[in-house]
Image (cartoon, rainbow, N blue to C red; front, side, top):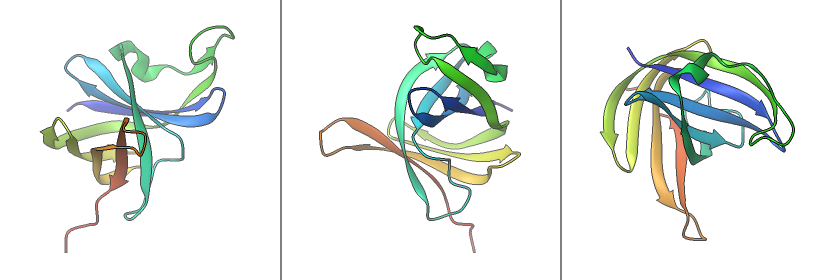
Length: 126
């Protein structure tokens, strides 16, 4: 089963990096606020560059002067199962220590016409 990690990243501003193991790399999104544990809470997610799979276990300090300088720690990790994969929509079941359930990443255009993503937990089926 593919893995995921969410890094808590103390860079210029505190944010969280959602990383999904896909196609031999970690597809990554920067999430400015703590990832949602409950349905109904939506978070902005900005697509960033892919990372090597070896980065999934990284915790430590990125030195000043380097891209992403600051403290990085693992906030959550686990496995996931992809339910739906389209260019503008990913639906996946997360089995982590903190995040459990079905989550979505849905692409949209911001007011500035830049691509963004919404990251949220789906309601439990009735």
